Amino acid sequence: MELRQLRSFAVVAEELNVGRAATRLHLTQPSLSRQIAALERSVGVPLFTRVRRRFALTPAGAVLLAAAHEILRRADEAVNDAQRAHSGELGRLRIGFVQSATFEALPRVLRTVQADLPGVCVHVDAMPTDSQLEALTNGDLDVGLLRLPIAEPTIETRVVSRDPLVAALPAAHRLAGRKQLPLSALANEPFVMYTRAYGPSVPDAIIGYCLAAGFSPRIVQQAADVQTIVSLVAANLGVSLLVTPTPPTDEHTVVYRPLTDKLPPWELALAWSKRNESAALKRFLALATAS
Image (cartoon, rainbow, N blue to C red; front, side, top):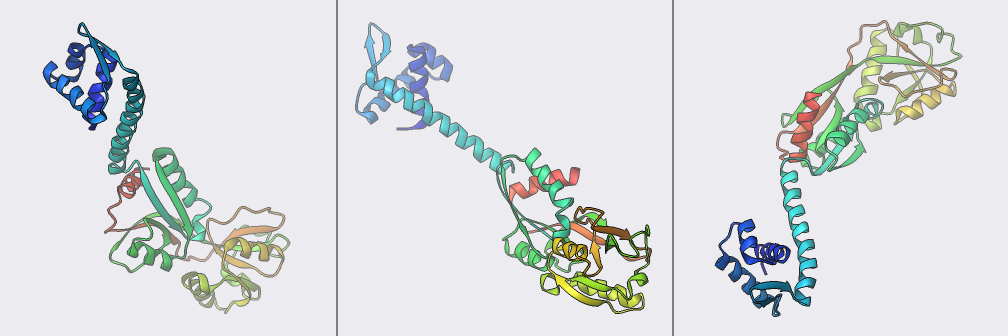
C-alpha cells in the first residue's frame, strides 16, 4: 500500500466518479483505475461496488477511508514538520547562561524564542563561562550567555550588554545615603565575595580593582550565586561589589550604588560554535541579530 494509492482512493471516495477524480488528481482514468485495482489487491478486499458505472464504498472501503484520512493527515504533518525543522522553526535549543544574565538578557532571549520560534524546545542551564565554552565546543550547548573576554577561536560572540560593577550595601549602612561612591570608601568594610569555585574571573578582577584603589578587601563571606550574596548583605554581614544587572531588592534592606572609579565594564555576549550546523540555532541568531 502506497501513499499515492491512498490519496487516489480518498479522492475517488469523495467524488464516487473515476472521471472527476482523475481530473482532480491530474491523472488519466486508466491510470487511476489501475491504482485503485492495485490498492484493492494489496488490501485483499473490494473497496468499491460498481453497478452501471456508479461507484459506492463497500463497508470495508468506508473503514479504510476513515483510516486513510488520518494516515494522509499525519503524512502531510510529517512533511510539514520536516520542512519547518529544516528552516529552524522546529527543533531544540540548549542555552547556557551566567548568573548575571538572569535578570535581563536571559528573559529577553527566551521571549524572542517564545514569540518567533514557538516550535523550538528550549533547555536552559546556569553555567560559568568556562563551562559554557567547553559545552559549546563539545556540542553539548547551542548558545551561551557568557562574559568576555574569551580565547577560543572556534567560538563566535556578539556583545549584548556592557555592565558596570556596583556596590551593594545594607540599607542602614553609613554610606547608603550617598548617590555614588569611590571604591576606596569601602576599604575598611567586611566583604561578601563571589566564590572562585563558580569561576575565578569575577572575584579575581574585583580583588584587583580593590588593590588598585589602595586596599585589600577583607573577605568574611563567600557565595556562589548573587541572590545569596545580596541576602548576606541584607543581613548586615558585609558589603559587596556586584556585576549588573542586579537582583531586584527592597530598598529598606539592600541598596545599590554606582562607583565613581573608571572601571572597565563587563561585556556580556551571545556565544556559539562555528561548527554548530543546527537550523534552530541559525534561525535564532538571525532573529537575535535583527532585534
